[in-house]
Length: 366
Image 1: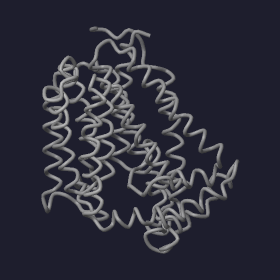
Image 2: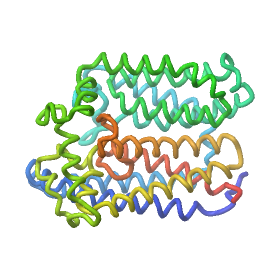
Image 3: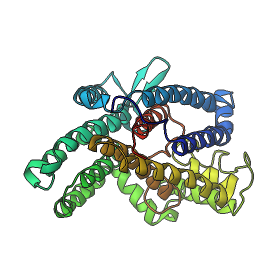
Image 4: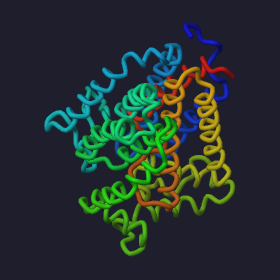
């Protein structure tokens, strides 16, 4: 396995580039009014997104050329470094507070979000851990419980920020990996009750989360407060119809939908490009999912299988949550749309993760 058997998966690469291009176009289209008003530069967010995309593509190309099993040897140190950053962000004076969450560390003109690094770092470490303990995964004490403990530590640190959305994506991804590694369904059912109780506790402990639940159930009871985002999102999606109002012709981006270039960018896309535009983007995500799962199935070893599955699972869970929030199916969570929403750490780390996936595809048996 010293030499790759082929070039990276062409269809997977095409899906990544297609989604990324749509994302850059939509970041400009959704943010130009807000950018002009706030920064006197209609291209402010779009230029930064292109810069992040360039850095992410370089990371993706570099990582796709490095044999994926290289990270098996360094998995422990990757996790330790991510934990150090995750602890550092909680230190006053180091971590930056935005939207009530201490989730960023300032680096010059930019900022990084350690929780994004942790998602990838934990996937790499857990892929190694589970591949080494596959025969023990049927045991609760020797396999399942140690795996949960590994997940619980970074999850607790992320909840101290607090960032429930990122924590949910990370835990969901890791549970998918554990199931694929051979964990028994009965063990998942055993912790389901405790997990549900814990989730209720986390929601009840923060008033803003309770408001999000009530806004989801009855948005019109507070249309200018807690229900504002979801109402404005649906106002964007509805007029889009089948073909949309045309690229750049969104009305909701005129200060109705708060910061439309981030969590609710899919609503602007649906308004401008219509149902067919939304389905087209989701089709590209489905192509990415299909080729990613295919890469996982034909990976030459269990580490490659779990690494691929973790990356695909992370992206797929984020897409499902974001689109569900935007369309009013679940409460607002603060999860961005991968490769599409504006955000430096998220975009760069997602592309880097996909570089690892492309690396595994070079060694797949088909």
